[in-house]
Length: 367
Image 1 (cartoon, rainbow, N blue to C red):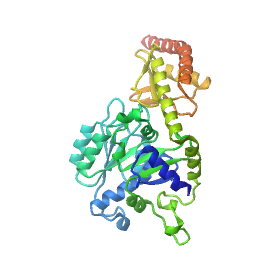
Image 2 (image 1 turned 90 degrees about the vertical axis):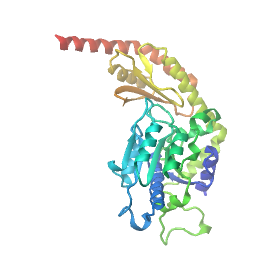
Image 3 (image 1 turned 180 degrees about the horizontal axis):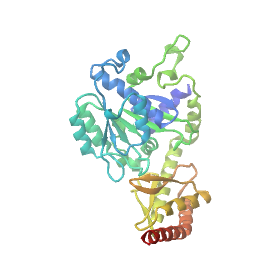
Image 4 (image 1 turned 180 degrees about the vertical axis):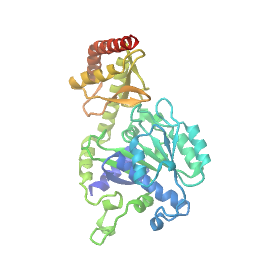
């Protein structure tokens, strides 16, 4: 079966525990839902509560720990699983949006009961990776489950030169990753990878008399995902992995990281723009420099989109920013130069016009 083959290939590619189970889902949001459902089942079982028999009725309180700048999809998955705001402890983050491990250790110490930690591998804005060795060490001390949100960052495991960045990733209990980003699969593709297959099955298993369930029937997708009616995601994943192979995928990830570094280096030389993140992967975050009107960033985005370069504006840490995510299969450093050339051409007049407008508004207010 295609899913069985792809599951084995994924675990080998990412060098994750080979006995892990894999669910083929719609994307990283649903992958986090599956991973956190398995986490909920296991940490309650460890606390002596039978979730399969009693659900959340009478269950000890489960506390979830994550960065105050974690991706919103994780909070949605927690809500779907019955966790409210009181179940979530937000850990202060640094200037890259990554949780402070010392603050996490203190928060874990303060809670008695089942615990789940959500860590980030590839922050949506900065591209940064949290300190997985430190997080895992704290988790093991307190009996916590570690789920890694690796929507795109998990693919960095393919690059030996990123080993310092990805250290500790393989020690987690579950991982969520998109297929429709770096793997170039069609939209509606993602993977939930769980180190503990029994917990995975207990959280997701659906059985009925009309469904195949004997050992001779092979893998049944209903054991690993919350859907019955679903498309055959395994076939598209099999075709892409068969076509690209380990070296092809690793080469693409490496090329995109190099393009992001090249783009950041060019933009740092343009007056009035600031690169706001250390570029460790494929994300480049850009803001207007001191004294520049935030509207200039919006105008710059409009000009880039009109030129055929797709970018999105965002709000992060109280300022408007441009997010560059280098992800399309055929993009490389030459494309980074092309984008930088366009920005060098349009930014001075856009920034100047926005700055003049800001000054006129200020003078008008003073008058």
